[in-house]
Amino acid sequence: MRALDYIVIGGGSGGLASALRAARHGARVALLEPNALGGTCVNLGCVPKKAMWYAAQTAHELQRAREYGFDIRSGVLDWSRFLARRQDYIERIQDSYRTRLKESGIEVIPARGQLVEPGRVDAQGRVLEAPHVLVATGGRPRRLTLPGFEKGMLSDDFFDLRSCPRSVAVVGGGYIGVELAGVLHALGARVDLYARSTLLSHYDEELGQALADSMRADGIGVHLHALVPGLRELDGGLVLDGIEHSMAAPYERVLWAIGRVPNSRCIGLENVPLSLDAEGHVQTDDWQNTSVRGVYAIGDVTGRDELTPVAIAAGRKLSDRLFGGQDDAHLEYANIPSVVFAHPPLGMVGLTEAQARQRHGDNVRVYRACFTPMQSALSDHPQRSLMKLVCSGKDDRVIGVHLFGPGSDEMLQGFAVAVKMGARKSDFDATVAIHPTSAEELVLMQ
Image 1 (tube, helix red, strand yellow):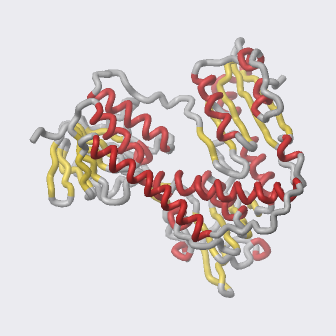
Image 2 (spheres, helix red, strand yellow):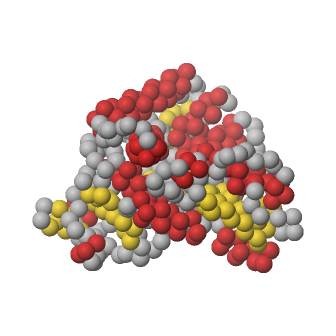
Image 3 (cartoon, one colour):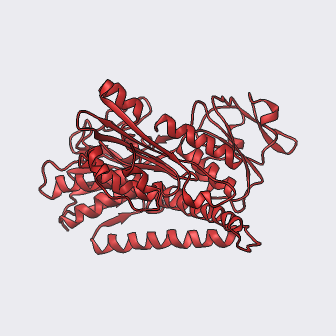
């Protein structure tokens, strides 16, 4: 039997992508995954989250349909029926992975991998050897040692819900808290969101404020600069410590959405002393090399742009370099687009206004469009959209695109290509608008 060329520890999106690309190049690959294939994204993240977002979006559309004049009497989601559809979809993805792995000749080992030394991995008693080892173990929800913390849910637990809670407190103003707060509210829960500072602090400040205003207008309680030191039971419900009682009537559920930490423990890193940061992320260079020769890392375990497409792209580029003869293949981390599936969604590519001004000073020009989309203007609850172009230099190079409003998730992809190619504001101006759309605002800004 031919010796292994590549051992991949972790069967999430990044590990799968790298393993499959390596096999396409002719490498003999072993993939270690003790749990379901697809990792967080397929099982406890992007896929089931987006499914719930679609359900919530449908609830919004039903409400708008009533306001338009349609005779729609029922708008309550049959959770059990929808969750069965969601699970069927996830299982189809997993079946597709199994088929592709088998066709590619990749050995899938349902075991947790532990590094023994560079080039050697213990798969629960079976020792594997290969010149190249990839750590792609992902991350998990952060836990805190606060009083009563265990009485709340983590984001993973959200996907175990079998009905919509009557009331929920969401603690955390990042993308997970914002997204799940919006889903729960749309599906019938009374929701309060408590953020330590502002919403989406890594996004452009104006978009975060626009989202907070929109959520409040939609009926979600948004409480900024709120510290929650603990959780306790009261009158058959849950109350947040340190919060004024008027804001913290007992909740049926509390959801902790306070970030994620890397899965870098219990995988033998002490035997192969990789460089870690203070949070435990495996440190890599731009080619995904760790501090140990022959050991690489991608995805959330590295803490670099924790997005599924980033892990996939980095994993494929790594395999192209190791096994495809492309010596300089690596992912360029600049200008990676991202979207938060709020209601409505928001997205960005490039620099925020603050980042641009810090980097380019007075050479920055910002163009804005704030408007009410036609679809929303025809309803009883008009909702404002905000778009921004951040430009720099004499040629007005577009170095940041920021979108908030319906359709932002879909329209951003094309504009991300333009930013990646170095488009200028004049290129946007020279493009004929598609009317009436929201996207046209990006080529009509003055």
